[in-house]
Image (cartoon, rainbow, N blue to C red; front, side, top):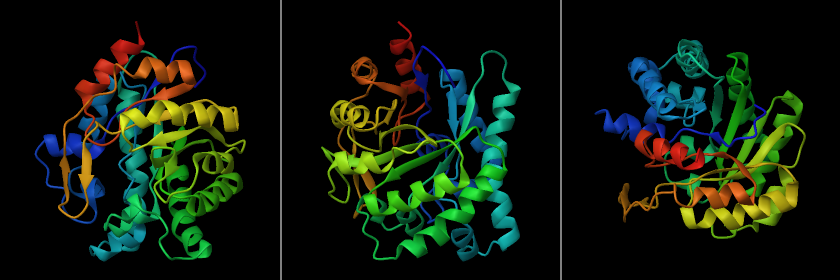
Length: 291
């Protein structure tokens, strides 16, 4: 999408579903509702679009054939459900009048499917070949369903990023690429200068960060732009912190709307929210960046 304006992303899928009364405590997380309640996923996409988001990020972050099979879903149905994540978002998008909107197919990290918090650590102890075997087929399923681009997101380390970038080049499909970070390093502890350099390929339309503290965004955006020369993508959490042991969020939400103009000035083009950011937050963000 070419635009002189910022491209407003949506917020978190899981928290919006939880706010609608859904229990997402099992290992499939929001992906379970692709099978059990697809209309609820559609309702969340609609809520974000109506709040001002220009992009719907699909409910495929934690969706994989192996993950569905562990819950007794047959392989052919699992493959269909992954594609459905894109088709649901497209149907909502196509039902709305007005300006062009996008669908970004979420490609979460390998650690998300493990459902043990390792997506926040990286360094899974598996080979590059195993990561290729995991990511490649589901990226192909998502692309076949017809999104506008992929959202390769919440990547915790450079090792996994290298595999994903190679796959993007082979598949020759546009994507944004975002790391989960703490301060000036990936979750696995690598410098962001090294991490962003990996993602500088032609197929990547924007490079940046997500699932991080709002205060970490602006320095990371500045680094991403300096290293890659590409537009940046930025969609942090609410400001609360995830307690992996207690499986709960702690602290207070700080919000991002007041910080977002600085991200835009620093070079962020794709701006939204991640965990614990809901439609009301996206509405506030859109209004702030539209002034």
